[in-house]
Image (tube, rainbow, N blue to C red; front, top):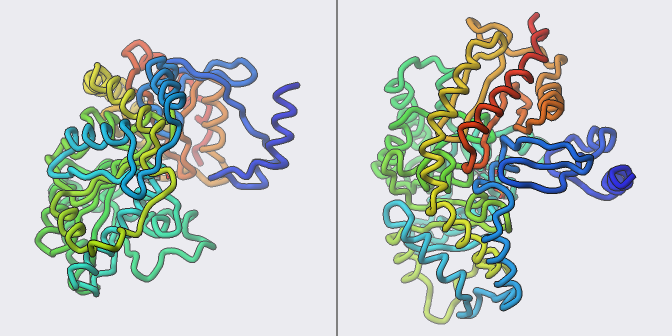
Length: 451
Ligand SMILES: Cc1ncc(COP(=O)(O)O)c(C=O)c1O
């Protein structure tokens, strides 16, 4: 009864992101009600293993009282304080200092946003400001990777290279460009070295085509999440960073998914010792308990921008909720959990998760299994040799999502027949076993996809 009335209200009034609008109205909403650890319970009482951590954000898992208490305490004491006009709040200041301490390289300055999309937009604005202030006013073009996702704001969605974010939205804009994704599974290059060389050559060619004096920055995810969890070879990002430095363009890393223990270390930059000029984060920053993003700005860029702002003119960028004290208090409490054992757990359970997931490679419909820490994907094919994809009318993604749910498992069923996995990083080895067993049962439901 409760569920029915919610479904009706939802159908009539709730305009959802990332669903076919009419199909959602017809299907009706699935209402989630509570969570504990890595498990969710829906309004019908079904218990589900959340192998996608909400939207790859609830890294710490559900139900942490310390986070609830930190938020409650802060809300009671001071629910809001602006960061404008020289004001600030204790948790936002402490959080900036903590993140600077944890950050790779000299990413010592923090600008707070509400999530990942406005973090990307903030970087775009800062990059423009930086080059204009330096007098390099022709540097306007941005380059990103095919299959990349950098949010769905008006500017960021054009750096994203997924067609549903472009079609009918008049994107990408003329200053937004893309080069091939370093997808090891579907690539003419067969070795890591070849894929890396290909990436460097593509970036150099694009910059040459546009003119280095016109290119501002190159942006990439360290694992391409929404594009299907595409994992570039180790060394790829470092080679791209080196190429950016050689060409005089800024190197931006988008760690909105990979940050905060998702791939093992606190930041995926640590795998290759990267020192980007800007880094965007969100999601795991608060483990999804409250909205917040953070842009990490390197000291070199910050100092030049700070000197460029006239003494009597404010830096014209900000949001009402930049550095929101409740979100900041939540982030501090969550980071305590990460440092108190969850990062160690991710580093320990990640390899076990990968090893167990690889046992699914033998399954008849599985073409590829790929993982970096607790971020993984399974790509479905109808032929392991040719890597042929199932026919669209087989509705593989829709069927997998429905079968998974029935088997007590939530994951991301990408439209192009890829299963995305990103369980909370508090997951235990026994819970990984349960996840794999439910996944295997789910895969068995699509054995008819051939032909
Ligand atoms: C790599 C990356 N960048 C940016 C975003 C946008 O973040 P948000 O949805 O918080 O705006 C996302 C969201 O999934 C993301 O995966």
